[in-house]
Image (cartoon, rainbow, N blue to C red):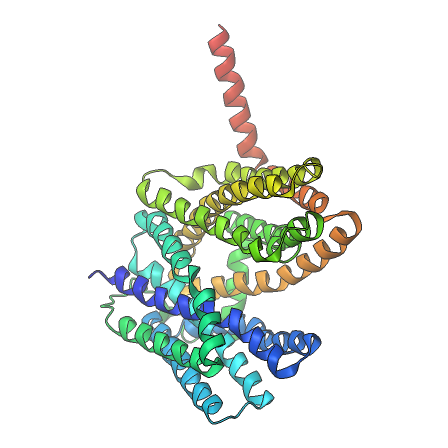
Length: 416
């Protein structure tokens, strides 16, 4: 078995475990507290430390082999889940224990995500980054596909402690697989930065992002997308499907399934067409991605007099298309970062990217929520994505201008 296959297997196990907890944990907390406000406060408190510590984690990870950090993170998650499972078995439902457990799981899950991203870059040749990122996208989505169903089933039949025990077993298996990765690191630059202080390393990461124009452009575009579009699952989709079209909540999950199908198909397409340089078409894919969302918004506006299920069928089709295009945007962008950001600062770069995204997404959700309540979720969806298209066109105006001139020149020559 190849090194990347070991990483993929371990990732599938940890991703499956990681997808169960966010579905089951809120159910257990709500049952324990009997309060939506306390549940919201619980998850705000538990997520905040991992967000704030993300930049520091990125710098700390660089001191060590990424395989060791990945193994340590997964093994720690297994130990945490084992301890929590035992506490629950003995009836220790103390709120403070649950808070500490959730905080530590969030921190080590973030550490696992950052270290595995850099480990992925170390294991894959630059020429095959898009291909293997496509495969990773397929496996990630297949791994989490049945996780919510299994998690809620086990929770309903056997209780929360059994769910946590299953997570412990999955993380143990993931750690065992990681241990078998034969790693010869491509990173030869760590020795040069070990003596630098945390502040110096942090500044180097910020300086790199600020001075590398291509990196900065994509970094800012991701923030724009997160602000205007990341609220789809929380605000616009339920606002359109449930609030406006009054579709039953029992079928609303089909929206996420349709999106996941598009993601899986896109991953297969990228893996089978690894010779296509998707990065060259990133600006067009950005625009196309937002155009599909604009079409969803317009469909909602103009099909309100039709049967709700007619619109929902069209929405599901667009969600499949949206999932397909989204991965065509995300995979080449991730591959671009992996190929252009030096390995010796890659973990701090991804940490800063994750930190910025985790800060901007709640702001985007807040803004979209207020705007949607005033003018409607579908109109908000249209406006947000038109703004994204304008910003993308501004960011890539030179590239778009060259393409447009080439198109006009071709037409002119054909007319001659």
